[in-house]
Amino acid sequence: MKAGGCQLNSALLVVLFLNLCFYGASNSSEVQVCKLCSGTVLSHSEVGQFCSSSAGRVEGRCCLKNGTTSDHSTVTGLDLSNCSLAQVENIQEASTAEIIDLSLNPIANISDFTFQGFTELNKLILPEKVLCPGGATSWKKIGVAKGQRVCEGQNSMCNQTGQMTTDCPENSQCAPFGPGLFECSCADHYHGYKCLREGEFPVLQVFGPLGASTVVISLVLWLTQRRMVKPL
Ligand SMILES: *[C@@H]1O[C@H](CO)[C@@H](O)[C@H](O)[C@H]1NC(C)=O
Ligand SMILES: *[C@@H]1O[C@H](CO)[C@@H](O)[C@H](O)[C@H]1NC(C)=O
Ligand SMILES: *[C@@H]1O[C@H](CO)[C@@H](O)[C@H](O)[C@H]1NC(C)=O
Ligand SMILES: *[C@@H]1O[C@H](CO)[C@@H](O)[C@H](O)[C@H]1NC(C)=O
Image (cartoon, rainbow, N blue to C red; front, side, top):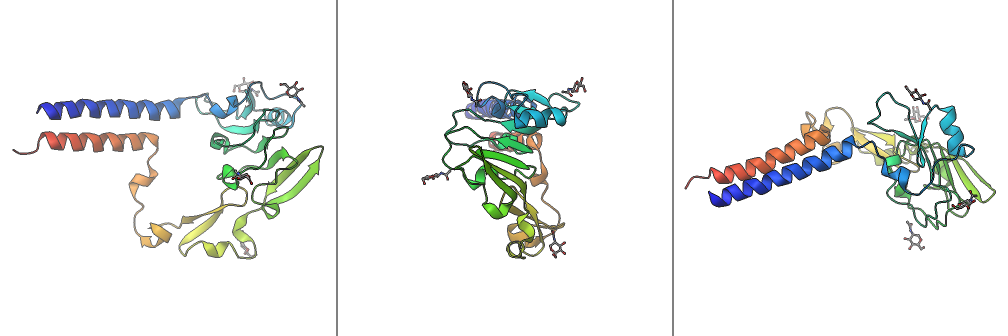
């Protein structure tokens, strides 16, 4: 019994910690990527002009959608220009951005996967020597001028000469997933590896952060409680 009680305590600690993590992450209105470097979006810059024309709200290096609630911030623009950035990683928070400016930074190369899921990205401004992610075929227009490379308008990878679409298995649909990237999502009633399994979609996969922490709580409690009531 003594050991069981101790385990319950640590289980509760885990639960508390998990809840702090999950709620902390989902309720925070602070978007870290906006503070990746000092200063704010300048009004005359590309992102600044985009922000005022789309009636957004500037916060640090971001343009945020001026929504009705302040606790859910959607990044529509990200201006990390002149930030002394040597590499670009962990900008997933800005995956809803329509415009990103990375010019005037000593960046050598950027991984294609940095922009995974950036489906809204319509204009990407890079230092001239950095190539557009996904390569030239991933963009409608690429311009080089004044030390900048501007990648504009994403081409969908889902319908180029039928080549990519065939990579998606049967029972699945191809959808754009950022520059040069696509994802295959299983059609209704199919799931699992290569969408080969038919049936109801497993509920676990559609839980949000709250659901996930609840599941973990239940699991931890179930495990510890089960030990406590274990017959002699
Ligand atoms: C954002 O919305 C609030 C209220 O909806 C409004 O008062 C404010 O002027 C808006 N800001 C911008 C920059 O449009
Ligand atoms: C870049 O930033 C530095 C210092 O923060 C500033 O002096 C310089 O004018 C900026 N350059 C441009 C082109 O905005
Ligand atoms: C950038 O280039 C260097 C040298 O070619 C390579 O080692 C590194 O993995 C590249 N980084 C990315 C993010 O592609
Ligand atoms: C792919 O191309 C075909 C023929 O050009 C067209 O009928 C189809 O709607 C396209 N699919 C998508 C997802 O754009």
